[in-house]
Length: 226
Image 1 (cartoon, rainbow, N blue to C red):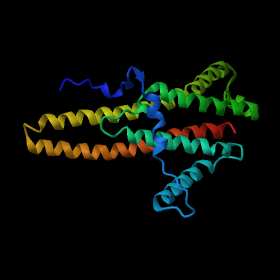
Image 2 (image 1 turned 45 degrees about the vertical axis):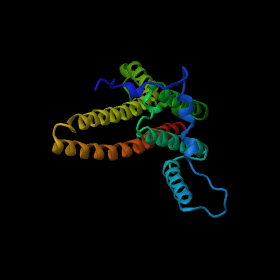
Image 3 (image 1 turned 90 degrees about the horizontal axis):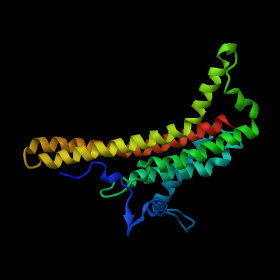
Image 4 (image 1 turned 135 degrees about the vertical axis):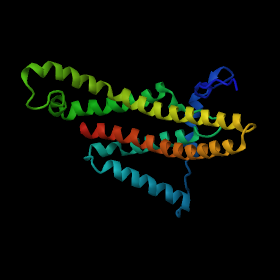
């Protein structure tokens, strides 16, 4: 097979125009809604999961932090559906693009930090210098804490990109190995195919876990600044 290993990560185009925007807007269309007074089982299960996730993330927040609940729930639903749709054959996963993940991480991180400086400026500045720090170490610690603060959105984006990309590459390699051995050794093909199925199940779990981790870390940044 001469297929490029990274071909699935190239942003698709339609008539020379980027189709990433349409792909990003597609997952919300799959979320079912109900116009009836009594919901069906799918809607009820969906609402139960949203309430459970929202309750778990918002318990530690005060009143000001809970104003972000709608944004955080929307974020985790968007990332989860995008990751899951990316597991389908011949599909494109926007969360494998570092630029998109940075576009999600930087505004949310910046909003939380700005809120912290506006509402609790003394506590926000105190994070740069822990109590009891020796005087000679003060300049170095301030620089280190500043760098650690500025690196947070990059860490968020890189973590999501790396985990989703690594899983897709591994599935591509094992799938290619299954196809290559199908005409050579049938028992080996069955073993590799079983590994591929198990890996696919694992990737479904990773897609959901990474969405939860990304949103939870944004929630923790918000908690530190409210």
